[in-house]
Length: 364
Ligand SMILES: [Zn+2]
Image (cartoon, rainbow, N blue to C red; front, side):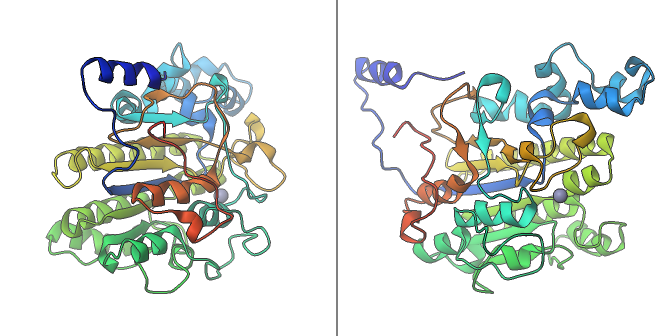
């Protein structure tokens, strides 16, 4: 659904209210990425084609997954996976990328893997000559996190990244030590005994080699938000990707529901605080997609064309559109960095002239 801007402007004029100026007060931004979530699950919940494939010839209606997740429409199915996003959050913003509605969001790097995607998100352009895979290497360019800290003259504590994947120690900043990073199994110190217990548990819990489970990341990030009041917070989740590589479709759906729980806690807290209420832009997206065919739902690489399709949600106090974007120009992953900078009143092209342009949120 889209609101017509001219109609809104007319109403404002009729009531003698001045239309909002194009400049706006600098605000807070929270960026959340959920690794490798396909457009199929985001917009349609459990994919009927994957459920059928996973039933291996048996009647799909008899499977546990079908009983749990099937519903008469894609809209009803996706609400079973992410009830908060679809029920509440999108009343305050929009989501783009549903091909069924003629909306497209694409990555521009050619590798369709994680570091290339995160580099594109954080620097505003594909770095196909340098970032070709997930090997450990220092981010070659200044990220939007560093740019915002420097240009908005913020203290280090005000720009923070909490990430499940340990490689963000390298990805999130070009100059080590510029922003606050808690990545992978990094310790998290808190005065709250419950958080201290979680800090110990992250080492004890069974997990992947290079990433802690998202629950730890999310809880540390929420605690940090409450104590340090960052202006720019990045939360990066990983469970959905590792579980997909392991072929655990049911657990991918679970992980997505857990991400939805996190978004609910995050949003409710933000809206309860004067500093953040109606003054925070929340951006939610993915680093890459995955294969479209049910046989390839878990895979993503250079050769899987469909993995370039992602989705993007922007929730903000004055985003013009609400709900699902229908049609419109294709949006690109390389526009996210400039969009974040723009929310702080900053021009990211000063840092990176090659970066994608900010996405207009207010019909500017
Ligand atoms: Zn992956």
